[in-house]
Image (cartoon, rainbow, N blue to C red; front, top):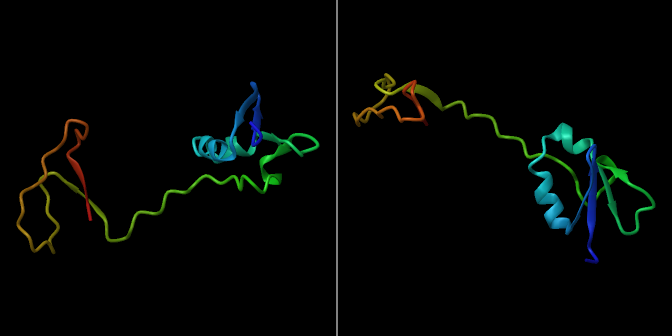
Length: 103
């Protein structure tokens, strides 16, 4: 594999990966953990920390903030300004508190 990339963590060396595979793998790490890794690719004189590897641009995507117009409602509640009298959303088995995400 000519495009072989490796990373090392406290458990040892992992790889080889293509650059795309390595980027995908890094999305599963928390930001703090990814910044603690070292990386090596052919042409590097030694292992480099994530911040020094431009090809990786190691960043964990941040979850966007919840929009201001979203509100939590209980299963049998309706907002006062609601104009549609649709049925209440029943609680789901995995939602025992009866909370539903409404926007």
